[in-house]
Length: 168
Image 1 (cartoon, one colour):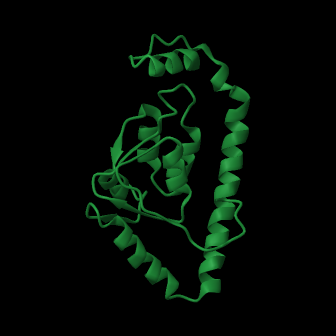
Image 2 (image 1 turned 60 degrees about the horizontal axis):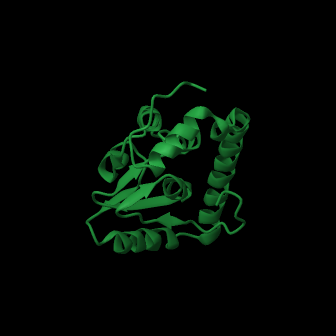
């Protein structure tokens, strides 16, 4: 989304589970309305790929210490925790997340569109810069080629706990 030339704001309305890439898509959206009890997870940490991109996106949304904890532990976190950390904008009662997202969209749409688009454009420019920097930092590590990634992938496929990891 960061390289989109359509500067209309995008509102995510996750419910149930948003893990890994789905979490990344949610975090790239301009606004987030999550259903109560939605669960999120940075799965890349436990898979041996590192959660740097998700740490950066969570941190960009203002989550700081919370971002570091969930990126390093890879633990599930709830919509309620994400709201308290400033990651999401609103929590909706279960089954009403789309309704609340539409209400938020109506609030945004009541403003002059060029003004809204200018803010969205600037926000996405900064997000794009952040994502480029994270990629520059992590791509040379080639974590997908490590023994630890191989063990994590095998353990996932075999539905067992991974380990021991060797740092190679």
